[in-house]
Amino acid sequence: MPHRTYLDNFLNKAGPATDEEWVPGAEAIAGLESSKVLSSHVCEVILMMADTIDVSNLNRQFLFRETDVGKSKAEVAAAFVEKRINGVKITPYNGKIQDKDEEYYMQFKVIVCGLDSIEARRWINATLVDMVDEGNFESLKPLIDGGTEAWEQDRKGDVLDTDDPEHIAWLYQKALARAQEFNIPGVTYSMTQGVVKNIIPAIASTNAIIAASCCNEAFKIVTSTNPFLSNYMMYSGDEGVYTYTFETERKPDCPVCGNLAKDIRVDPNMTLQEFLDTLGERPEAQLKKPSIRSGSGTLYMRFPQSLEEQTRPNLKKKMKDLVGDGGEVGVSDPAFQISFRFRLVFCP
Image (tube, rainbow, N blue to C red; front, top):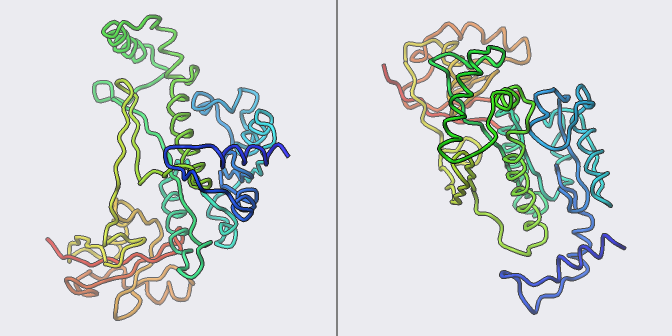
């Protein structure tokens, strides 16, 4: 079979990290043939996206066309790749990743993410960590997380208005000066306008580089043909081509995988309601609908309604009247399948 031929080529090809005496067995080949990858062509891919194509998406990648605007991203992307690559099978799913349970994610060998939503990224990370069963190796699912961000600059303190000729002219002058500095031809007013109004594919190449890097890591993980990344790679293309790889260390107080409660500074005179509001803004929390409990009992619970009504009076109480300095609290949120532990450090 053609697909088997591809696997044979991959598994038998020599490389800098391969063992010359190693011979792939039937179990290894069968495992690769049955592999499912969540969002890259290894064997079978399930592609999950929750939204539809907008005109602003057209300059970010090579999959969508103007005729696709308004259609499901997952369905259009799956159809495009299946047509372009012979033999690949992609199952599109138009919905949120949070709609699926742990049993659904257990079917995958590798999960690749390219999510815009911080909430969704944190959810899938926490879910996969929570799925790990030390007695079941199959419960360990590698997560390859890729993302891009753009350089932004305000114009004299104002947000750039792509429909304002004065703003476009200012941006054109900046682009022209940079082009002259590096001897880059072809920079015109119309081209500048096309880039900022999403007419020209200005960032598709960057997304393609990150996507290719994610696919490369997935391939290395499922085939063991080369050591995989450990564990972070950054690419910068704003001033030439620059990459940097380093290993991020595990935090002992990580709310997802750490064993220690994370310190969080709190004004003891703020109310519980004010404290819960800050959890949506703090980088270490970013919880939108938190419920909270302490060692002495539940302080506030959003669900069910009866318990919410019972604990609602605590929202007006001051933190110092509910928890002592250095006390620990557990915080849960519907967006996550785990609870977060915080140690409150009082400060005025």
